[in-house]
Image (tube, rainbow, N blue to C red; front, side, top):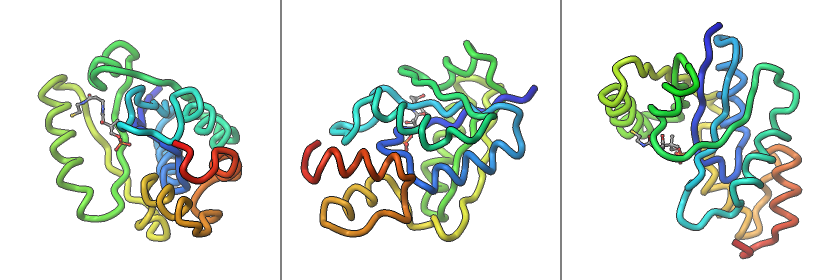
Length: 161
Ligand code: PNS
């Protein structure tokens, strides 16, 4: 059984993240979506909310398990027998930092392999921070996030971070 981990802050999970999880679950037997505990300095959603929104958004994907972690990703993968790290690439601009992280992770654990999956072009512009900014400024974000995330953002309200 090949197990992949898809780590991130997921503040909140977007349709772009969900696209990467769908693609990863076609390749791997289990995909652990791992929410970083200290994700961002001023998150819109706290850890429990982010985990809950990931669970609700991916409820139909039976290969997905949702977890959270703190500390080094390489420690998590060692402790949990994870085979590969999955990362999504939206554009060439993502490559530099992702390449650095993949190289550092391999330095920390020589067995830490990173698989890059490219997102559908329709999500190439998407990021959690941009979605939050558009939402705060009154733009329509319905096509960028799942219904549970949209509802949670509306509940939270603009400016309530
Ligand atoms: O969604 P993000 O914030 O872009 O995800 C970044 C994440 C969580 C993948 C990265 O910050 C990470 O792996 N953090 C865990 C701590 C760690 O292992 N740092 C060294 C990475 S080379």
